[in-house]
Length: 205
Image 1 (cartoon, rainbow, N blue to C red):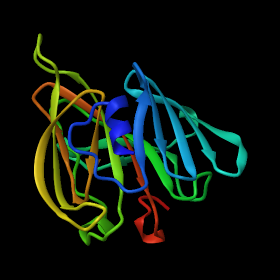
Image 2 (cartoon, helix red, strand yellow):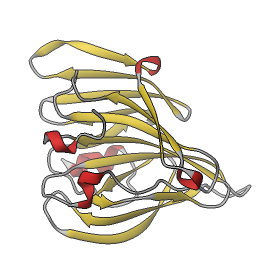
Image 3 (cartoon, rainbow, N blue to C red):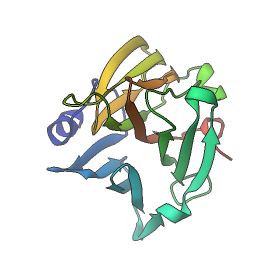
């Protein structure tokens, strides 16, 4: 399952997932596919934004379309960690457990901030993926950001690492502390997808 992911997309770290998979259409990193055995989201990007999300669930033949203007927007953090977060698949439907959105940093070389409260007490079974979209940076050099991960993977194995990420690559994100920062002059956005397997894992109400 994860071997197939690596053939279809580039990863900044090793995929460490159980039921969630992430890929993009072959040769087209502007169309992302996230799947479990019953849920599937097709994400169409427009530059550094999500244009639309098409969600389908096994047993339901009718796809659900969520357009950009329907996303739930909130502002999170402050100072050099302030960012805009757009929730496309949120609690209450249409997806039973899949939660999906995009986070857009404000400014260049800025951070995301502390995790949600529930992530400060890591539990087994959590699965999350980021798809980083980077712009700017030093002329003639590919933009780079740094992703921190301190907590546990879905199987309970501990992690305490920091790794570089390039634009249009996936990263597996552990439950716990996981800020990301752009290098000087780099703007960071990332599509995020995780599975809210428990009610207390919801990021918005």
